[in-house]
Structure formats: structure tokens, C-alpha cells
Image 1 (cartoon, rainbow, N blue to C red):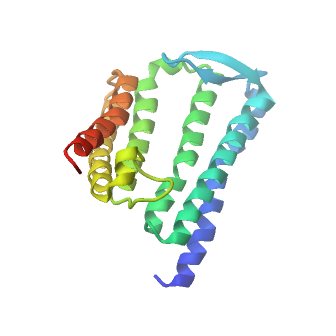
Image 2 (cartoon, helix red, strand yellow):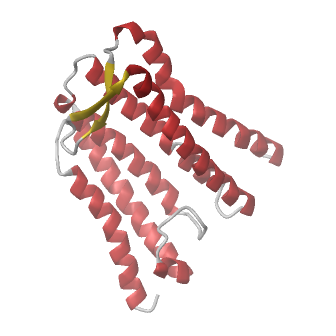
Length: 217
């Protein structure tokens, strides 16, 4: 692929990401009259709806917040792209995170609005969605080079290129394994301590990096 093709892709990917973020709004407008006056905007840790907003606020708030977050993410991505630190495919994966979050959260909101008890299929929806995000994260971290935005950025990884490589490779494999397991658990409707699992995914790479640091790496 030549440089012109790469430039075209760099322009198309952001447009697609914003379209996906706002895609749920199309379905919400189609079913607008059937939606209740208030829609949920927050779940507690047990996936029980605990906060509602007006219909207009609910359908615009989520994509609005995610659009701002995506703009910030794309700024970081293209800043890194100009430095040619990491390959384009890796940066495109990073750009896909907020669109996936938008679709997932909107699906949860609409499901509750139409009277579907989220607790009945939370294992399927939440586990699969988070599993997919972890798999994406795994592919991103697997070959990420030291940069100012993406990766396990700790005092020890920033001071040592070897520590960076080993820590991010460890985090990548851990994310891939946990992500695949969560997807399987979701398909089998197996519930588990998802928040404990996510905390483990975040803490283990930090502990591993610190261990390398103490060993002089």
C-alpha cells in the first residue's frame, strides 16, 4: 500500500468511527415514539439501572460524551502517527474502542427501555463486549513501541526499553487470554467476578513491570 492510500485511510477511519458512535441514534429515532419518556443513563456494579434522564438527554448525552473522547483519542493517535512510532493498523484499533463502547451502552439502554431485564443476559452482553475490548487491547499492546499515549506507561517502563517491551508483551498476552475467556463465558451465559478479573488485568502487568525493575531490567 503506497503513501497516498495510507493518507486516504487516515481520513476515512475517523469518519467511520464517528458514524459508528452516532449509529445507535438512528435506531433510537426510528423507535422514538415507542421509547418511554425517561431512559436509563447509568448502571450500578450489579448491572441494575439506577439513574434515568429525559429521552432527549439520554439519546444525545452518550454519543456526545464519546464523540469528545474520540476527538481526544484521535488527536493522540494522529500525533503518534506523525512520529511513525507505531503501525497504522495498531492506531486504527485504538480508534475502534469508543465506537464499540457506544454500541454496547446504547444496546443496554434500549434493551431496558423495551422492558428487557438486563440482569437476565448481562453475562452475554457485558462479558462479550468487554472480552472484545480486551482482545483489541491485546493486539494493540503486543507490538506497541514506546510512545506518549499507548501502552503500559509506568515509571519503570518509561526508563527502560526492555522493561517496556516485556511488560507490554505480558499485558498483551494476559488481555488476549482473559478477553477470549470472557467471550466464551458470555456465550455460555456463565457469570463471574468480572470486576475482580478486570482489576487483575490492570494490576498484574504493573507488578510484573516492578519485578523486572527490581531485577535491573
